[in-house]
Amino acid sequence: MIQTILAVTVCLGLAAAIRALLALKRELQGVREINNRRVAILEMIASHTSLGKILQEVVGLCSRNQPGSGAAVWSLSGKTLLYQVSSGLPESMTNALRTQSFGCDGGLLSLTKELNKETVEEIGKLASASHLKEAIVPLENAAKDVIGLMLACVPLSAVPDSLWQKLLAGRRRAPQACKSLTGTGGTRSEEHTS
Image (cartoon, rainbow, N blue to C red):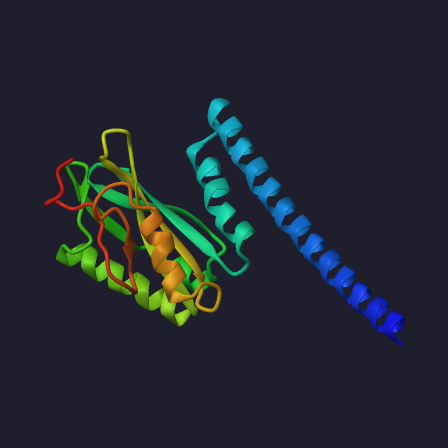
C-alpha cells in the first residue's frame, strides 16, 4: 500500500515537472523568435530597407509576443506626428487611427494640449470599444527630441492593472516619458527640459 502511494506521488510529481519543462520550452521558443525578429529588423536597417517595411516588422513584434495585442506608430513630419503603420489591431480601430495625428513643436510633445488631448481621448475610446488597454510611448532620438510615437495595446484580460502600471514605469527614461491613457502619467512636455 505504501509503495503504491509512493509510486503515485512520484508519478504525479514527475508529470508536474514534465509540464513545467514543456511550458519553459515554449517560453524559450517565444524568446528565441522575438530575438530572431530583432536581428532581422537590425539587418533590414543595415540593408537600407524602406522605413515602412521596418516599422511594420517593429509593430508586428507586439502581436507576436502577446496574442490579441497590437501596436501603431506615428513618425514626425514637420511639426506633426503622422500615422505610419499598425499591426494586430482591429480593423475599425486601425481605420480610425489612420486619421489621427499629434502636434509636436521643437522636439517636444504634449498630449495635454487641446488638439492632442482630443486625439488621446479618441484613441482611448477606440481601445476601450475593442476591449484593449493602451499606452502611448514617445519615441525619442539621442537628443531626447520626440521623433515618433508608438501606441501599444493589450487585451484587457491579459495584464492586471498593477502589472500594467509597473510595465509603463519600467519604460520611463526621463520624467513623464510614458502615458497610460487609462491611468496616470504623462509624456515629455514643454515643462520638461533635459
